[in-house]
Length: 182
Image (cartoon, rainbow, N blue to C red; front, top):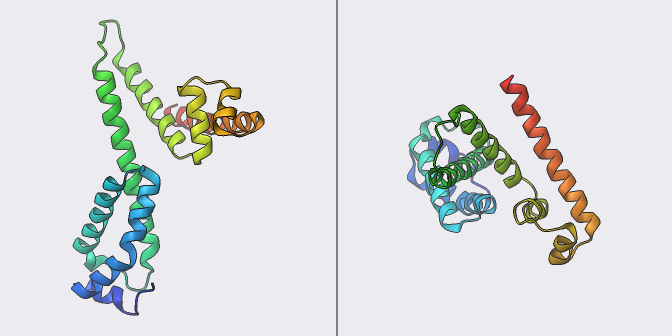
C-alpha cells in the first residue's frame, strides 16, 4: 500500500488521520523486520510501537519530500540492534555477577574481555541464520563437523566452509577492535 501524496506533509502538521495512514501502511512491516532480527514477537511489537510513538512526537521534523520507508528501516534496525546489545549486556552481567572476583584480578582486563565477548556475540548474531547455527553448534555446543552435518542434514564440507567464514568475520571484527584500541 502506497501513501497518498501529501500524507507526510499532513503528518508533519499534526494530522491524526495522516499518522493513522502511515501507521497502517508501515507498522506491520516494521514489526516483522524487527522480529526477524530479535526473534521475539512481543518485544518486536513493543519496539515497533516505540518507533511510531517517536515518529508522532517528532512529526514536525518529518521531511515530506523524502520517502519515509528508509527512515523507518533505519529506526527499526537501530532499535533491534540496541535491544540485542542491551539484552546481551544484561545477560552477561547476570552471568558474571555470579562469579566472585579475586583480589588479584585486574578489573580493566575483565571489562576488555566482556567487551570482546559482546562484540563476538554481536558479530555472530548478525551472521546469516545457517552460519550462525553452525558456528554455535561447533563452538558453543562443542559438536564435531560430522555431528553438525548429520544434525542439519548438510554436507561436512558446507559445515567446514561456514565455520571458516564465521571465524573470518570474527577475526575481521576483532582486528578492527585492536586497530581502534591501539
